[in-house]
Image (cartoon, rainbow, N blue to C red; front, side, top):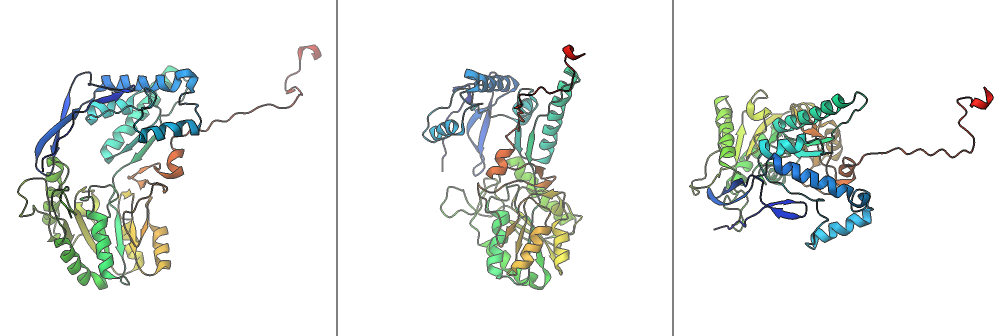
Length: 397
């Protein structure tokens, strides 16, 4: 199916405009590998213009337009967005571009008060470094001045899904598949490590493969599609390499991990189910960001918890069992910011979203997410009519 991508520009200071250097980034349809359009590529010059526009917007009319406006006033504009009516110029600026050219200048800009980032650990580390450099720059200007650029990071994950032996196997199989494959594995919270009770492992895996074979792999625009292509050629090759490395290290590819026979074009891959995995293998330790599920078995609840927490990451986690007291124990023991009980991946805008360990810090969504964008100010007013009395007035010396 042909897709037409409308020509886009950057949105800066209330208007659409071309990038300063007029660079563009090609858009490749991962289902066909064809270039279907392009988007503007911002650079440091565009970032600086956008940040200055935002600064002006916050200070305009003494801040009354936005910075010090009431919640009701801001809500009016949020409703206006839904009605496609513009915000005051500079309040919203949209920059598309590559990480080194646009992301880096934005994260390190001294006039950016807050950075919220979702992405890889490597890029998250660079953003933290940029924020730290801002602190050093301001300290050098004045020894008495310490300014920190707040950062919220939602980084990678290698989330576990623990399945006990008292479950309805078909229901649990579907959750295991959905938790890893529903976005082609391209989501930080994917429960890509299946930790399975040994007494049901054979029956569970047999059904898991049968269900996986039944997944419709196609262009996402086709009716009934349940698994589309990986996002890019580079990511596709990376995911295939993960599978090959797992085999070389001694794991077994029980199903998938290769191109579907009926799709000769596009970055498509059959969902991979990998068994005979050890905790030292790359497939167990590193985030794949693709449709790859690795499997280990356990015999005791404590062993399951230890396997679940055997990761540098701590974003999502799931436990499936009919014993709700056990689910409660396991949920408390998980070292993760998000726990799903008898499901995997449901997300609600009212609930906090974020992780622990190398999955980042801070929270998005819900009232906890709003707190990351607030700065508490203390205001003290002296109400006594009496003088403070610490120093003797000159008349009494």
